[in-house]
Image (cartoon, each protein chain N blue to C red):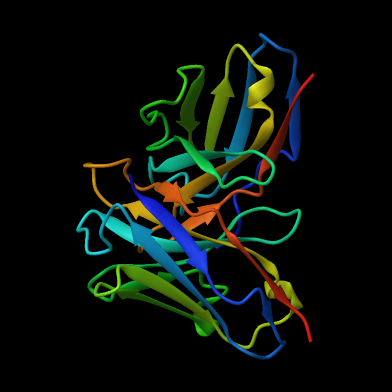
Length: 124
Length: 110
């Protein structure tokens, strides 16, 4: 069964870069049917899509975050990662990684599976 | 890309039905039949409940149903149960491989 697990520092200083990794088990990031996404949730608030990546290297981002976000998929490690630069307190959130289905062989155009989330606090 | 609009809260008694609306624009909900709905219990990751507007993943109760009219999608839960109390989020494809979430709705089972 597919599982996703986020990892990375829980505390990042303002103006620095937030870096997270999602390790996929029970499935492959090389799947032609799936994109791999990052979603965040500030404390007490709603979900915000950050962006998604494909094993080919294609990436897609929320326009509001596009200038600060990098997403990469590492097929050799079966992982994908998120980098968010120049962070501020507004980037404090629970960060989820998730599998997004891109064809009708799975639950089409939806986030089928989610990691448990990792809390990142931006503070000096 | 603005967040989809959902009511902040809805409530209902056990056994009743409730509907949660999700209003977008002609660029997202109105253009694609690709709205998904997620249930999130406190401290838990979201769970997919509806995809492609009205389809249920395996294992999701048929008490959950989805629909769409124009730029508004809806999630209906019939036969409310205590376990349905949670936050619910809609999400729509918005073109060019981007998606947008709604602000979320807190469902209280009275």
